[in-house]
Length: 362
Image 1 (cartoon, rainbow, N blue to C red):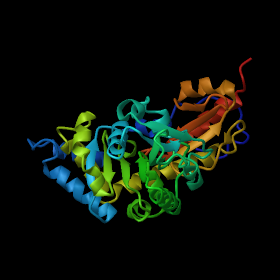
Image 2 (image 1 turned 180 degrees about the horizontal axis):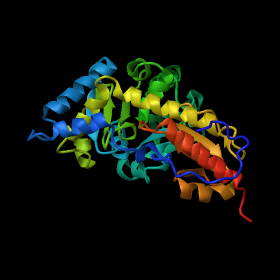
Image 3 (image 1 turned 45 degrees about the horizontal axis):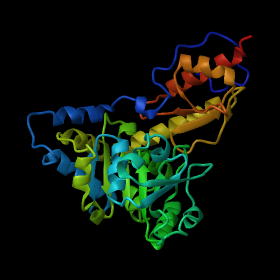
Image 4 (image 1 turned 60 degrees about the vertical axis):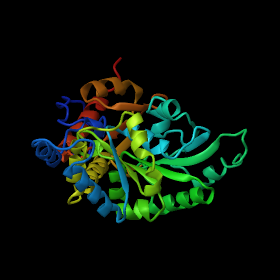
Protein backbone atom coordinates (compact mmCIF):
# COMPACT_ATOMS: atom_id res chain seq x y z
CA UNK A 1 0.00 0.00 0.00
CA UNK A 2 1.30 3.51 -0.70
CA UNK A 3 2.22 5.65 2.30
CA UNK A 4 1.72 9.05 0.65
CA UNK A 5 -1.92 10.06 0.31
CA UNK A 6 -1.32 13.81 0.03
CA UNK A 7 -2.74 13.95 -3.51
CA UNK A 8 -5.21 11.08 -3.43
CA UNK A 9 -7.92 11.35 -6.07
CA UNK A 10 -11.41 10.04 -5.37
CA UNK A 11 -11.70 6.39 -6.26
CA UNK A 12 -13.03 3.07 -5.14
CA UNK A 13 -12.90 2.64 -1.40
CA UNK A 14 -11.06 -0.60 -0.56
CA UNK A 15 -12.61 -3.37 1.48
CA UNK A 16 -12.09 -2.63 5.18
CA UNK A 17 -8.99 -4.01 6.90
CA UNK A 18 -9.19 -7.49 8.35
CA UNK A 19 -8.53 -6.19 11.87
CA UNK A 20 -10.24 -3.24 13.53
CA UNK A 21 -8.72 -0.03 14.85
CA UNK A 22 -11.60 0.58 17.28
CA UNK A 23 -9.88 -0.85 20.36
CA UNK A 24 -7.32 -3.40 21.47
CA UNK A 25 -10.29 -5.02 23.22
CA UNK A 26 -11.52 -5.97 19.75
CA UNK A 27 -8.51 -8.19 19.10
CA UNK A 28 -8.51 -11.95 19.32
CA UNK A 29 -6.39 -14.19 21.51
CA UNK A 30 -2.70 -14.70 20.82
CA UNK A 31 -2.03 -18.27 19.61
CA UNK A 32 0.41 -18.96 22.46
CA UNK A 33 -2.18 -17.82 24.98
CA UNK A 34 -4.82 -20.02 23.37
CA UNK A 35 -2.41 -22.93 23.48
CA UNK A 36 -1.84 -22.27 27.18
CA UNK A 37 -5.60 -22.30 27.78
CA UNK A 38 -5.90 -25.61 25.99
CA UNK A 39 -3.06 -27.08 28.03
CA UNK A 40 -4.67 -25.91 31.26
CA UNK A 41 -7.89 -27.61 30.19
CA UNK A 42 -6.43 -31.09 30.65
CA UNK A 43 -8.32 -32.88 33.38
CA UNK A 44 -9.18 -31.64 36.86
CA UNK A 45 -7.29 -29.29 39.16
CA UNK A 46 -8.01 -27.84 42.57
CA UNK A 47 -10.04 -24.63 42.47
CA UNK A 48 -9.50 -21.09 43.77
CA UNK A 49 -5.82 -20.89 42.91
CA UNK A 50 -4.65 -24.14 44.50
CA UNK A 51 -3.27 -25.37 41.18
CA UNK A 52 0.16 -25.52 39.50
CA UNK A 53 -0.74 -22.92 36.84
CA UNK A 54 -1.48 -20.28 39.47
CA UNK A 55 1.72 -21.10 41.33
CA UNK A 56 3.71 -20.77 38.11
CA UNK A 57 2.15 -17.40 37.31
CA UNK A 58 2.95 -16.18 40.83
CA UNK A 59 6.59 -17.16 40.33
CA UNK A 60 6.74 -15.44 36.94
CA UNK A 61 5.33 -12.22 38.38
CA UNK A 62 7.92 -12.33 41.15
CA UNK A 63 10.65 -12.85 38.55
CA UNK A 64 9.27 -9.91 36.57
CA UNK A 65 9.26 -7.55 39.55
CA UNK A 66 12.41 -9.02 41.11
CA UNK A 67 10.81 -9.32 44.55
CA UNK A 68 8.01 -11.00 46.46
CA UNK A 69 4.56 -9.78 45.47
CA UNK A 70 0.98 -10.70 46.26
CA UNK A 71 -1.25 -11.40 43.25
CA UNK A 72 -5.04 -11.31 42.99
CA UNK A 73 -6.35 -12.50 39.64
CA UNK A 74 -9.68 -11.01 38.57
CA UNK A 75 -12.04 -11.28 35.63
CA UNK A 76 -11.65 -7.76 34.24
CA UNK A 77 -10.17 -4.31 34.63
CA UNK A 78 -12.96 -2.60 36.55
CA UNK A 79 -13.04 -5.44 39.06
CA UNK A 80 -9.26 -5.35 39.38
CA UNK A 81 -9.28 -1.63 40.12
CA UNK A 82 -12.02 -2.12 42.71
CA UNK A 83 -10.12 -4.89 44.48
CA UNK A 84 -6.83 -3.02 44.46
CA UNK A 85 -8.28 0.27 45.65
CA UNK A 86 -10.57 -1.21 48.30
CA UNK A 87 -7.57 -2.78 49.98
CA UNK A 88 -6.13 0.72 50.38
CA UNK A 89 -9.14 2.79 51.43
CA UNK A 90 -11.53 3.54 54.27
CA UNK A 91 -14.95 5.11 53.56
CA UNK A 92 -13.92 8.67 54.51
CA UNK A 93 -10.94 8.63 52.19
CA UNK A 94 -10.52 9.72 48.58
CA UNK A 95 -8.67 8.83 45.40
CA UNK A 96 -6.90 11.54 43.42
CA UNK A 97 -6.87 10.91 39.67
CA UNK A 98 -7.22 12.78 36.38
CA UNK A 99 -10.58 13.69 34.93
CA UNK A 100 -9.86 11.33 32.00
CA UNK A 101 -8.93 8.36 34.21
CA UNK A 102 -10.71 5.10 33.47
CA UNK A 103 -11.91 4.87 37.07
CA UNK A 104 -13.48 8.33 36.73
CA UNK A 105 -15.02 8.05 33.27
CA UNK A 106 -15.41 4.47 32.08
CA UNK A 107 -16.32 2.38 35.11
CA UNK A 108 -19.93 3.52 35.60
CA UNK A 109 -19.24 5.03 39.01
CA UNK A 110 -18.05 1.67 40.34
CA UNK A 111 -15.57 3.23 42.75
CA UNK A 112 -18.20 5.50 44.27
CA UNK A 113 -20.80 2.73 44.35
CA UNK A 114 -18.80 -0.16 45.74
CA UNK A 115 -15.93 1.54 47.59
CA UNK A 116 -18.02 4.40 48.97
CA UNK A 117 -15.13 6.76 48.34
CA UNK A 118 -14.81 10.12 46.65
CA UNK A 119 -12.84 10.55 43.43
CA UNK A 120 -11.00 13.85 43.18
CA UNK A 121 -10.57 14.06 39.41
CA UNK A 122 -8.21 16.80 38.28
CA UNK A 123 -7.79 18.39 34.84
CA UNK A 124 -4.93 17.26 32.60
CA UNK A 125 -4.39 17.99 28.92
CA UNK A 126 -2.22 14.91 28.40
CA UNK A 127 -3.87 12.55 30.88
CA UNK A 128 -1.00 12.74 33.37
CA UNK A 129 -0.96 13.96 36.96
CA UNK A 130 1.78 16.26 38.19
CA UNK A 131 3.14 16.33 41.78
CA UNK A 132 2.03 19.93 42.28
CA UNK A 133 -1.56 18.90 41.61
CA UNK A 134 -1.36 16.43 44.47
CA UNK A 135 0.07 19.06 46.81
CA UNK A 136 -2.94 21.24 46.04
CA UNK A 137 -5.32 18.61 47.45
CA UNK A 138 -3.65 18.11 50.83
CA UNK A 139 -4.86 21.22 52.67
CA UNK A 140 -7.61 19.32 54.51
CA UNK A 141 -5.55 16.43 55.84
CA UNK A 142 -6.49 15.74 59.44
CA UNK A 143 -9.62 17.89 59.34
CA UNK A 144 -12.72 15.79 60.00
CA UNK A 145 -14.81 18.18 57.89
CA UNK A 146 -12.90 17.21 54.75
CA UNK A 147 -12.58 13.98 52.81
CA UNK A 148 -9.09 12.58 53.35
CA UNK A 149 -6.97 11.88 50.26
CA UNK A 150 -5.39 8.46 50.67
CA UNK A 151 -4.56 7.12 47.20
CA UNK A 152 -3.28 8.66 44.00
CA UNK A 153 -4.28 6.56 40.99
CA UNK A 154 -2.53 7.07 37.67
CA UNK A 155 -3.27 5.34 34.39
CA UNK A 156 -0.27 3.82 32.59
CA UNK A 157 -0.45 4.25 29.68
CA UNK A 158 -3.04 7.01 29.92
CA UNK A 159 -6.43 7.19 28.25
CA UNK A 160 -5.00 9.93 26.02
CA UNK A 161 -2.22 7.75 24.61
CA UNK A 162 0.64 9.14 26.70
CA UNK A 163 2.78 7.42 29.31
CA UNK A 164 4.73 8.31 32.42
CA UNK A 165 8.48 7.87 32.47
CA UNK A 166 9.98 5.99 35.40
CA UNK A 167 11.35 9.30 36.66
CA UNK A 168 7.88 10.87 36.61
CA UNK A 169 6.40 7.93 38.50
CA UNK A 170 9.19 8.16 41.05
CA UNK A 171 8.43 11.83 41.64
CA UNK A 172 4.74 11.05 42.12
CA UNK A 173 5.54 8.21 44.53
CA UNK A 174 7.83 10.46 46.57
CA UNK A 175 5.10 13.10 46.74
CA UNK A 176 2.52 10.52 47.80
CA UNK A 177 4.61 8.82 50.43
CA UNK A 178 5.83 12.13 51.82
CA UNK A 179 2.21 13.03 52.54
CA UNK A 180 1.19 9.58 53.80
CA UNK A 181 -0.60 8.64 50.57
CA UNK A 182 -0.31 5.48 48.46
CA UNK A 183 0.29 5.23 44.70
CA UNK A 184 -1.94 2.96 42.60
CA UNK A 185 -1.31 2.33 38.91
CA UNK A 186 -4.17 1.35 36.62
CA UNK A 187 -2.08 -0.65 34.18
CA UNK A 188 -4.63 -1.94 31.71
CA UNK A 189 -2.00 -1.02 29.08
CA UNK A 190 1.06 -1.27 31.30
CA UNK A 191 2.79 -3.43 28.69
CA UNK A 192 2.56 -0.67 26.08
CA UNK A 193 4.05 1.82 28.52
CA UNK A 194 6.94 -0.44 29.53
CA UNK A 195 7.66 -1.26 25.88
CA UNK A 196 7.63 2.43 24.95
CA UNK A 197 9.85 3.42 27.87
CA UNK A 198 12.40 0.73 27.08
CA UNK A 199 12.93 -0.17 30.73
CA UNK A 200 12.03 -3.15 32.89
CA UNK A 201 8.79 -3.52 34.79
CA UNK A 202 10.79 -3.47 38.00
CA UNK A 203 12.48 -0.21 37.04
CA UNK A 204 9.16 1.43 36.18
CA UNK A 205 7.08 0.18 39.10
CA UNK A 206 9.17 -1.28 41.93
CA UNK A 207 12.21 0.98 41.99
CA UNK A 208 9.99 4.04 41.68
CA UNK A 209 7.89 3.15 44.73
CA UNK A 210 4.50 2.13 43.31
CA UNK A 211 2.37 0.37 45.90
CA UNK A 212 -0.25 -1.49 43.83
CA UNK A 213 -0.66 -2.01 40.09
CA UNK A 214 -3.48 -3.41 38.02
CA UNK A 215 -1.56 -5.47 35.45
CA UNK A 216 -3.54 -5.76 32.24
CA UNK A 217 -3.76 -8.80 30.00
CA UNK A 218 -7.02 -8.54 28.06
CA UNK A 219 -5.80 -5.73 25.79
CA UNK A 220 -2.51 -7.51 25.13
CA UNK A 221 -3.41 -10.93 23.75
CA UNK A 222 -5.39 -12.61 26.51
CA UNK A 223 -8.99 -13.79 26.29
CA UNK A 224 -9.91 -12.36 29.68
CA UNK A 225 -8.40 -11.63 33.06
CA UNK A 226 -6.33 -9.03 34.88
CA UNK A 227 -4.00 -9.21 37.85
CA UNK A 228 -3.86 -6.97 40.91
CA UNK A 229 -0.20 -6.92 41.92
CA UNK A 230 0.57 -5.74 45.44
CA UNK A 231 4.17 -4.55 45.24
CA UNK A 232 3.92 -3.84 48.96
CA UNK A 233 2.61 -7.30 49.97
CA UNK A 234 1.39 -6.16 53.39
CA UNK A 235 -1.27 -4.06 51.64
CA UNK A 236 -2.95 -7.30 50.53
CA UNK A 237 -3.72 -8.31 54.11
CA UNK A 238 -7.47 -8.35 53.47
CA UNK A 239 -7.26 -8.87 49.72
CA UNK A 240 -8.72 -12.38 49.70
CA UNK A 241 -11.88 -11.20 51.43
CA UNK A 242 -12.17 -8.05 49.35
CA UNK A 243 -11.89 -10.02 46.12
CA UNK A 244 -14.55 -12.51 47.20
CA UNK A 245 -17.01 -9.80 48.23
CA UNK A 246 -16.36 -7.99 44.95
CA UNK A 247 -17.42 -11.11 42.99
CA UNK A 248 -13.95 -11.25 41.44
CA UNK A 249 -12.73 -14.60 42.78
CA UNK A 250 -12.42 -17.04 39.85
CA UNK A 251 -13.05 -20.60 40.98
CA UNK A 252 -11.21 -22.00 37.95
CA UNK A 253 -8.32 -19.61 38.41
CA UNK A 254 -5.95 -21.73 36.34
CA UNK A 255 -7.52 -20.36 33.15
CA UNK A 256 -6.47 -16.81 33.99
CA UNK A 257 -3.12 -17.79 35.48
CA UNK A 258 -2.17 -19.93 32.48
CA UNK A 259 -2.75 -16.98 30.17
CA UNK A 260 -0.49 -14.72 32.21
CA UNK A 261 2.19 -17.41 32.28
CA UNK A 262 2.07 -17.55 28.49
CA UNK A 263 2.51 -13.78 28.30
CA UNK A 264 5.26 -13.47 30.90
CA UNK A 265 7.34 -16.53 30.04
CA UNK A 266 9.70 -15.39 27.29
CA UNK A 267 8.49 -11.77 27.36
CA UNK A 268 5.61 -12.29 24.94
CA UNK A 269 3.79 -9.48 26.78
CA UNK A 270 6.48 -6.99 25.74
CA UNK A 271 6.73 -8.22 22.17
CA UNK A 272 2.97 -7.93 21.75
CA UNK A 273 2.90 -4.41 23.14
CA UNK A 274 5.97 -3.29 21.24
CA UNK A 275 4.42 -4.47 17.99
CA UNK A 276 1.15 -2.64 18.73
CA UNK A 277 3.10 0.53 19.49
CA UNK A 278 5.05 0.21 16.24
CA UNK A 279 1.85 -0.21 14.23
CA UNK A 280 0.44 2.97 15.79
CA UNK A 281 3.56 4.85 14.76
CA UNK A 282 3.23 3.47 11.23
CA UNK A 283 -0.43 4.47 11.10
CA UNK A 284 0.39 8.01 12.20
CA UNK A 285 3.03 8.25 9.49
CA UNK A 286 0.63 7.06 6.80
CA UNK A 287 -2.31 9.32 7.69
CA UNK A 288 -0.28 12.43 8.51
CA UNK A 289 -0.37 13.82 4.96
CA UNK A 290 -3.98 12.96 4.14
CA UNK A 291 -5.89 16.22 3.56
CA UNK A 292 -8.46 16.59 6.32
CA UNK A 293 -6.56 14.52 8.90
CA UNK A 294 -4.87 16.43 11.70
CA UNK A 295 -2.89 14.39 14.22
CA UNK A 296 -3.56 15.44 17.80
CA UNK A 297 -0.05 14.44 18.93
CA UNK A 298 2.61 11.98 17.88
CA UNK A 299 1.69 8.53 19.22
CA UNK A 300 3.60 7.40 22.27
CA UNK A 301 2.04 3.96 22.67
CA UNK A 302 -0.55 2.05 20.63
CA UNK A 303 -3.17 4.79 20.16
CA UNK A 304 -3.44 7.48 17.49
CA UNK A 305 -5.63 10.53 18.07
CA UNK A 306 -6.67 12.72 15.15
CA UNK A 307 -9.30 15.27 14.21
CA UNK A 308 -11.38 14.68 11.08
CA UNK A 309 -14.00 16.66 9.17
CA UNK A 310 -17.32 16.20 10.95
CA UNK A 311 -19.08 15.03 7.79
CA UNK A 312 -16.58 12.18 7.33
CA UNK A 313 -17.15 10.45 10.66
CA UNK A 314 -20.31 8.57 9.74
CA UNK A 315 -19.06 7.08 6.43
CA UNK A 316 -15.65 6.25 7.89
CA UNK A 317 -17.10 4.50 10.94
CA UNK A 318 -19.59 2.64 8.75
CA UNK A 319 -16.69 1.43 6.60
CA UNK A 320 -14.38 0.36 9.48
CA UNK A 321 -15.64 1.01 13.03
CA UNK A 322 -13.76 3.21 15.48
CA UNK A 323 -14.72 5.60 18.27
CA UNK A 324 -15.13 9.35 18.41
CA UNK A 325 -13.21 10.48 21.47
CA UNK A 326 -14.47 14.08 21.63
CA UNK A 327 -17.63 15.02 19.74
CA UNK A 328 -17.03 18.75 20.10
CA UNK A 329 -13.58 18.57 18.51
CA UNK A 330 -14.35 15.71 16.07
CA UNK A 331 -11.42 13.97 17.73
CA UNK A 332 -11.17 10.23 17.06
CA UNK A 333 -9.05 7.45 18.51
CA UNK A 334 -7.51 4.62 16.52
CA UNK A 335 -5.95 1.76 18.50
CA UNK A 336 -3.52 -0.87 17.25
CA UNK A 337 -3.29 -4.37 18.68
CA UNK A 338 -0.76 -7.16 19.03
CA UNK A 339 -2.02 -8.67 15.77
CA UNK A 340 -2.37 -5.49 13.68
CA UNK A 341 -0.40 -5.91 10.45
CA UNK A 342 1.26 -3.35 8.16
CA UNK A 343 -1.28 -4.45 5.55
CA UNK A 344 -4.13 -3.53 7.92
CA UNK A 345 -2.54 -0.12 8.42
CA UNK A 346 -2.15 0.39 4.69
CA UNK A 347 -5.74 -0.55 3.88
CA UNK A 348 -7.10 1.59 6.71
CA UNK A 349 -5.04 4.60 5.63
CA UNK A 350 -6.06 4.13 2.01
CA UNK A 351 -9.74 3.94 2.91
CA UNK A 352 -9.53 7.12 4.97
CA UNK A 353 -7.80 8.90 2.09
CA UNK A 354 -10.37 7.73 -0.46
CA UNK A 355 -13.39 8.66 1.64
CA UNK A 356 -11.99 12.08 2.50
CA UNK A 357 -11.02 12.69 -1.14
CA UNK A 358 -14.64 12.18 -2.11
CA UNK A 359 -15.55 15.37 -0.32
CA UNK A 360 -18.54 16.32 1.79
CA UNK A 361 -21.81 15.12 0.26
CA UNK A 362 -24.00 17.94 -1.05
